[in-house]
Length: 546
Ligand code: BES
Ligand code: MN
Ligand code: ZN
Image 1 (tube, rainbow, N blue to C red):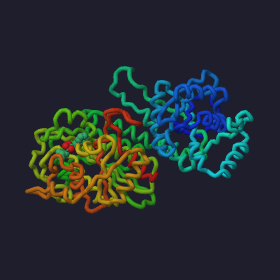
Image 2: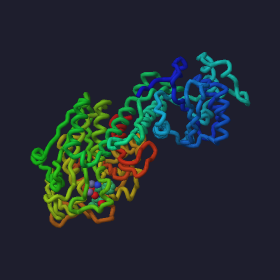
Image 3: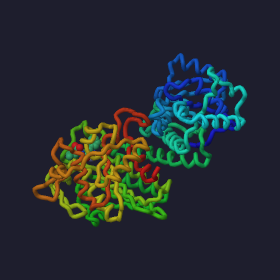
Image 4: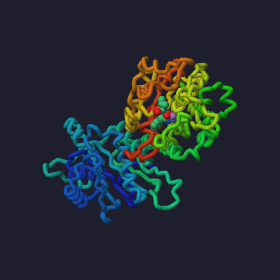
């Protein structure tokens, strides 16, 4: 993808579509006139035609309402898309992300090569500016000298409609989100489709943004992380989409290694021998029922003048059958996505490697299958975790916490100042929050709040669940320090988090249970159905401090 500022001296020739946003109930004639005056895009006759069609089609600027109009050779852009932005009070960067993804999907069959997007604030917001400011703005237009006398003409009330620019900060957030959204919306996984009869993947697009108050380098530095984050999200989505027969723990480790090599991260892959030496009895226990060997993956990014080290830790169960506490068939169907936490960590590490934040980051993935082979854990077995604690495995299907226990201990021993784990950990969180939001829990409210905020900016919802001491009661074992599964049907997500907390050594920690939003049964907003790679964006926004 390429991103640049539109200027009237750029050729509009070869533009596939020009996107003009309209806020709810704005006067379309005013919008078109303001766009014409500010950017020189459009023509008076064309604007009049668009206005008529918009009225006929009852286009009111309602959120996500679309009117795609051909220009029949009267204008260098093949199509004009009016896009409803809804109310200005809720219009934010996440809206732009979804808009961009939606347009990428709508235009998929056109395979556009060049898109112009006009970005501005609403007339409503304009009304809050002082009249002195308005006058100054109007003078600005005239000064620029790009306004034709025709375009200067005023509306029926004798007032020149004003093109209200976004603030610099808002403009940067929106263009980043648009860059992100387009690439997210263009994703499709067609590797196993043998016919041509499937959605075409999107191709590279040249974007020109019109109406922005920022410079070309500012535009580039705003879009770059957006593009990087979306590319990494799509990479993680591919990893999740791969069936368990292809994406084994060995393969996952190879993928992590090749990403690390490509982007200059260090990457250590540990196999059974080394994992044994580290004393990861809990992780090893889960792997016992599988024929596929386990892997422990450590990717490192060292910031030049690092202020702190953040460990991001992913659950990498490449298939969760439940083990001997076997899942029923319909609960097992999609369990290739039980490595979505690992995919998010690997994706975020790619972003970190490219965008180079000010903090050091260690990406840690514990990868294994959870299978009921003849060596499998028996319910009732006792394991000793790396930190010395003993665990009675009363349910082999509560395997995620067993592998994370040792991964957390490892992160503590690596000297992490802060730990964030991501895991498709409990069915209970899907019951509580559906597929809309991830659960977040932890031992440090400031970290939790910051991660929730990063998620909101990144377009990923997180909802905090409690860590009441009482939940620990359910994890008491008669014969060991802990058991791995609490009472069925009682605060399952919180109980799981209470278990993980036992392995954090008092270090600052947050846990994201992504079982819900990690997988969609039907497409939603910028996402397709299937694996979403939830967490890549939240982690990236958090670590890059966007
Ligand atoms: N991977 C599952 C959790 C899960 C369920 C993810 C549904 C996505 C969708 C996890 O390993 C699991 O089986 N958890 C058990 C825990 C229970 C045995 C305490 C669960 O949620 O039923
Ligand atoms: Mn399980
Ligand atoms: Zn699992």
